[in-house]
Length: 145
Image 1: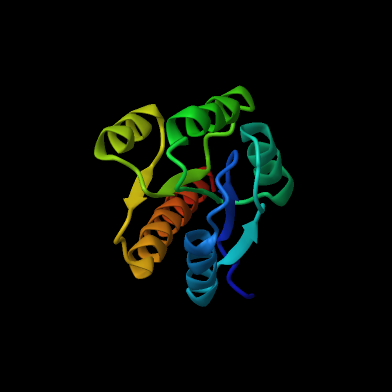
Image 2: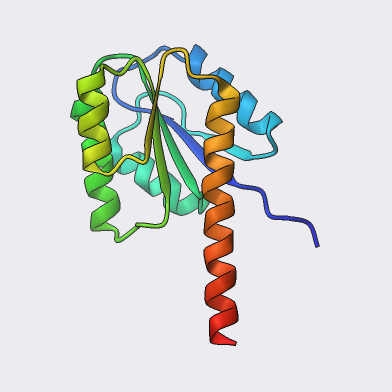
């Protein structure tokens, strides 16, 4: 039986229209064997969460280069909580000042990748999270057997 691919949703929120970074990340995650769904531009927090639900993704990646990350990303986190979705890895990347990165992490983002992060580092972080999830599901299943 083939191993299930990690499903990643990549999103751009608001009026942020710079797509080079998200395109590079999408390709690198595909090269790493993940399935990537890209929402396109001008997404709202509700649209991102609905896409995550519809696509049944494991990871939500938000690219931000506009400086509006503190306006939009906390709304995505709030919407995930409203929908009682707590099993998704949420990562953010882009031009994120340190103080904003700290606030995002405190709000529930799992990792912030700033400029200069290697694409292999991002794929490795996601893969390690996925492996931990699979291990914990396997141990829960064996306990219940």
